[in-house]
Length: 332
Image (cartoon, rainbow, N blue to C red; front, side, top):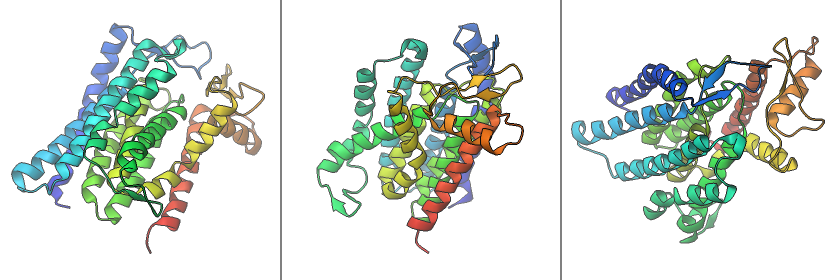
């Protein structure tokens, strides 16, 4: 990769880093604020939907990459169409996530049916360009690949990525880990341009994490989780790396199973205590977050579990899955 093509990654980082403080002030002014559920009697309301800035900052960097390829190197080899299709899908699902945030998660946000329909519609840009290859897991799906596999893949990645959430820094750090792993995979498989697309979002998420880590000054909202999930699916489809990405998503499959156990009604939050520690909110485990609290209480002599420890343990688990995926699916 030409060094000039990497400048857009830094642009994404600094755009997000510089705009997020402004977003925090404006969100508080218009009362777009949410309670930090893992803090006991927390009267501090945190700015919401900061994912809008993350997505727009990443898009700026990605569009700059296209501009450099087009006007400076005089070459895009048809990749611009595929990148723009990914951006169109991501922009559409960003709007869906923002609407869900504005309607309020406590009141259910968008209805489940509306969410499913709108997310499926966001797959249209990738469908119409027939992104990716129809052969997956050794099976040639033919026309069924753009008509069925692509929209279902985007729906699955978008909704499941949204499940593992609710803790300061969790969604942002998970996005950084997963997309960094995908950047490595796409680079090693000869699609370095997809690596740059992934790294633009990684850079934007890193800037956001500075403000979102515990104690959070801004929350990502569904606008971020939907968008990152969609980008993961889009990169997997265009880069033909569905198999390894599905393996990377094992923690999310487990999270989905646990959420279904609670009929999608049990919240992921812990039960906060006065000393800032967390306990299990239910008698049973209804999410990886709850499982992390349970494990930490078992292995820590003090039995005291803090929010940042829950996030760290989940991230370590995700990294372990990724490393196993590298060993199983990448060529030697």
